[in-house]
Image (cartoon, rainbow, N blue to C red):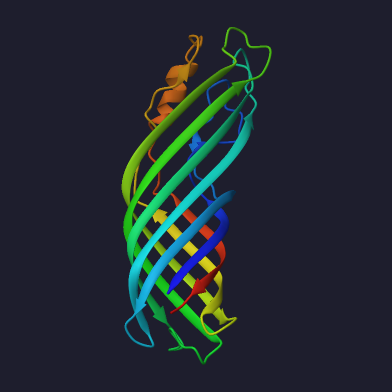
Length: 223
């Protein structure tokens, strides 16, 4: 069985908090926000009516921005962030109705569990608003890391033909890393005051194992 699904969901990757903080860069937070797009691919071999084993690959991308109002000399700025994660893993599929690979039944409910390894990236761009008061127009930060990750899927499968099925359900994805940004704010010219030092403290802050919750829709081809 081979399947391909697309997903849309909510993630709690690190982003600048939407709050004024007395001229000090607002801290990072990990509130769940919409804006995650994902693709999930899997291949399984049926061992019985209830179990199948195989492999899985997935890619997730989250993007979002926040406008931060500053008080005092630092100008207001927009912080736009992009997080990405590519994931590969072994996979176990379980049919709750015992219709795994069945050509005669139209319905099935399945659970897939996939522990594996992920490659992760993060990029953040700050765009300062006029009057700049000596600040550059832009600054940026980024980072990459590999980490163990876990994905679980619960979905309903409906047979359109003997070999083609429609899949609709949800996926939960968690990445077990506690830091991703390099910790250095990059910019064309020196930023005045203590903004750089304060912002780099945020870049070095702990990431609480980012999570993604997605709604998925896809198709499965069985042989």
